[in-house]
Length: 72
Image 1: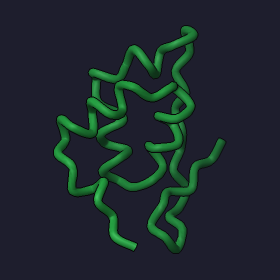
Image 2: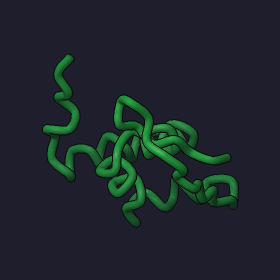
Image 3: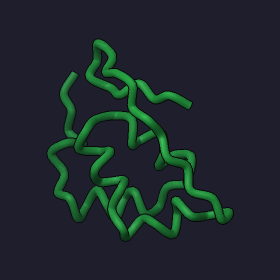
């Protein structure tokens, strides 16, 4: 299985992420270190603050597929 999403530019990914819901953005942030860093971009703050609440997740480990395990 080839990962073509990681080949996209930062600007392209931020544009895609700007169209996601808050919960979708949260899920994407757990995929990899790069995705977490991108979903932390200030340009996406309006999504993260939607509803007046910001959730901060603690990463506890990485699974066999390289995805982050999040403590809720």
